[in-house]
Image (cartoon, rainbow, N blue to C red; front, top):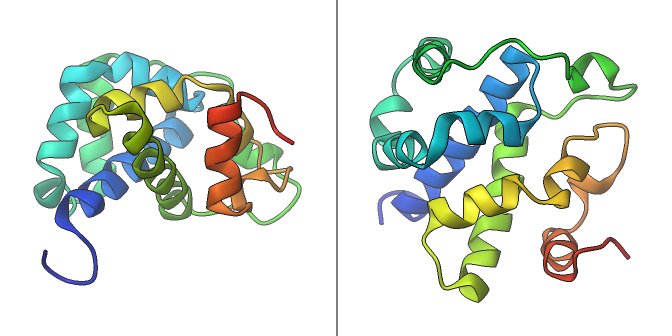
Length: 151
């Protein structure tokens, strides 16, 4: 452990933040980006996050967008937001916490759980910046994921 956070947790944070950045840049739902990247590329981002993190995020995202063939979409939740938009780092932290919380129950690796979470209904709720769900208590977000509904 270097710094305040476990290195792999920080790598997961960067991976989720990069996914958010690419989704905003290409105007796609987050699961569209995750599914286009695929397990192999996501694993590469996660494994080399400490290196990618020190590069320009615009360049890193462009390289992966091009390599994965991610096309421009029409989902622009940033422009549709009526309130302050959380940064891609803020959203990366939400996903990181959710993935770490879910990993204990799934008994799976971070990339497997990441793919499952980004393809769940919870991801759609996190993407709605006009709701209050994305800044809800992390335990409530995790409970919603496990329960399959929001209470």
